[in-house]
Length: 440
Image (cartoon, rainbow, N blue to C red; front, side, top):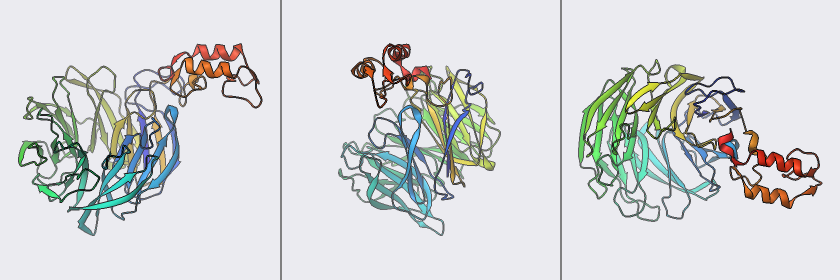
């Protein structure tokens, strides 16, 4: 399994070649087990150190890439029981209310899809998981999402399926779940979002129906049931799905990618969850698309769109920036191997949204990243951030002054490595004063 971790740059770089919109030239590699199939990934602080990590679902359980400061990943480990199954969705949330992130992942057996399941694993706060429970999910489990759907203060679970609509489990309040409830949602529900599209403060379900060429919206009744389904016609074979306020009117709109018609269609929210066709981006990446990611990639306050394709043996992506509801595409970038899952989040500590692409069919993991940097790798100010809080400030100055004078062995305050902490080191520290992330 291979990961591409990409941090977007919107300024030209000098040491890494010129970086246009959506291009990510910096990279490092690591080796992970070759499980052939890879599932969804999330970007989250899994071990409570204040730095975001990357967690991905695979047949042997999960891969956790533990982040360190300034966007490097020093540890890779596997957690969770092997399912010997095709991995699907993954969500991280606190299911048992102990303040530590837990996980839920969906999977199914190729030779017996009726044994599809959601596996809930409880986190130990240090990046590990244990005490798993399994919930049978019906045929061909796909995406899994988590939210408080019934308003009782704990986190519930919803799983999409290919044949049996959506499956709902309400949390008993301690990480155990009540009996499964099913709601009709059409067929082939691979991409799903659990968000409030109706504006009533309760999470609704938005999903694609791939084979029937429909977008479905299931409105939450307020008690965690979804009795009403409204459908909207899409193009041929809708796959990717993104939900965000694309027109900046305060409610959530929907974007849908299509595998066969090679287009992204936008649906505008009227304010109460009713959607109307809005605009279309034709052939954004030159091949079938699997994932859409919404985030403010250019930092102007509105929701942009990253289009990702994993079909045809090459992962491709392109960022479309949003200006008053009008989208403009940047340069397309590609990587080797096939990228089936992607997620956006902050991974390299520069406050710019990044993109993680989880690639199948390889045991070598390639992580490509780039924020608003002048060099590939650590910013020049990293050593001056002695306190490691991403700022060069009074905390670092206090440490330096406490170590003033000759030092053997060398301390972290000897910034020029000359064997003594003196005015030269103080000058280096003061030259980097301020937010270190902004100096990348």
